[in-house]
Amino acid sequence: MRCVTRIYTDHAVFDVTPDGLRVRETFGDNTVDSLAALTGLNLADATDAAASPEGV
Image (cartoon, rainbow, N blue to C red; front, side, top):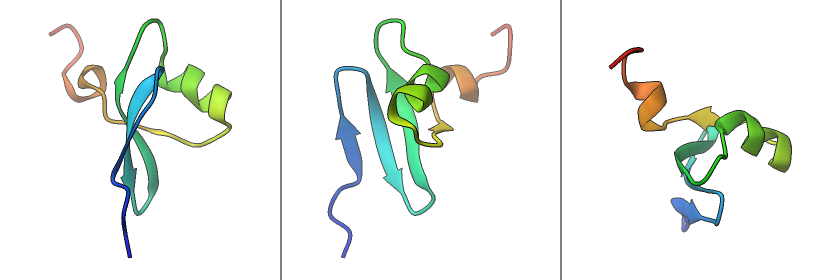
């Protein structure tokens, strides 16, 4: 049974997936790398910055 699909914190919004946590949005000066270091988890980047082509 799957109950939680999204986690909201002061640092970021995470999607819960079968493969682990995916960072949907970050707040302040947090980055996916800094959140991974803070949590000790491997995090997938699903932020708008990761989805858009560089320079756009």
